[in-house]
Length: 234
Image (cartoon, rainbow, N blue to C red; front, side, top):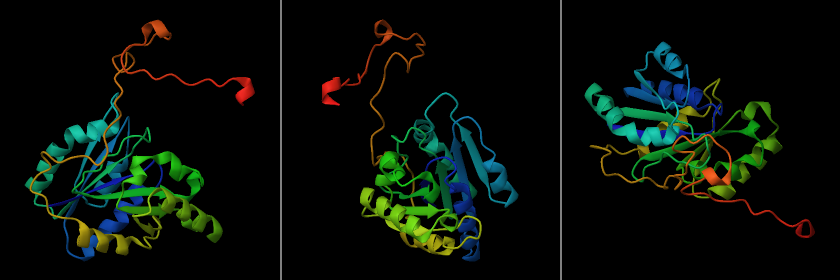
């Protein structure tokens, strides 16, 4: 079974891109399943089920969804292997813009949208910077100039990634993504002992452990303080 990871900010169009890409993969006679990871709630699993795509849903609750993803990917891959699928697609959102659910040996796709603002590529972090393929969506509701500027900003952050423009409503561009997946995703016997492309945040403070009181006296562990500039320094 082949595995790919798809991630991106919330509402960037990940699910629509995946659904259209799977339509193309079905034309190529490939069986595909999806594992959807989210934080508190999602109905995306219903969209996959309506399209008759086998799906598993995992909600992280009070945990970081990407930490939850890494802790559960082995079980999800075992489910995919047992189902005999040709390809398993995982969908996850990096809600803090700091984590990245990418493995070194697994094809990584990041989905971003033109409406998020031209400054967004710099804010997304390893989720965008370490992707193999960057898919830009919602290009039909911005001008050509805005599309080019946004794509340029993506290229500055991740110059080695292949950039695709996909319309999640019509599916335009999804066939190319399906072909890239088939050409570049590798079969994996297991994800055990694989390595992430980027380490998770090294933050374990009193608030990670449930502290709710505000104040320096209650702050323990890995705490970083803001540098307050003097008025004269601007």
